[in-house]
Length: 199
Image 1: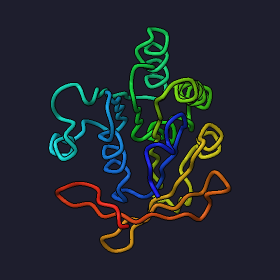
Image 2: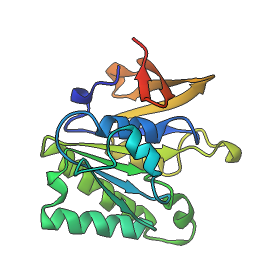
Image 3: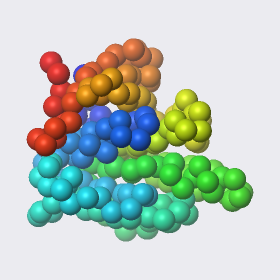
């Protein structure tokens, strides 16, 4: 099951290989219900047709930002938190949260501290309001990864952890956390109409 009400007040980590459907799932979720969503991209602009697919390209349904480093992400979130603007969003998505960390952690001693700071802010927002946070993280298949870079940090701050895998044209969401949901699965496909769950 993938029910919006179960995500509210929580931080949810969604990980999987490239093309597994993480971004589509996030945008589909942000399009549910009232209010404005915040989408922060660490991997370049979001294609307009993808936003249009979910009715997020016009009006004030979605506020989009780009960040270019772990520090940039932490500073952006801190400034929005201090100004009070971060708590006004119904849903927040960071796509993908570990894109810069995986490389910066090699040479930047404070990369872990910066990532923890960003996640602490998001956790505070989710737990103290009627909003929710979605974090996507990519697993690099070509590098033999089984879990995302920075997984221990990401898992610590996440109330929910799910893995998305592909099986032909279908995508399978598998719950890993919390323990009472471990093993739960939901299947969906992606078409021109967007995400469609199987009942």
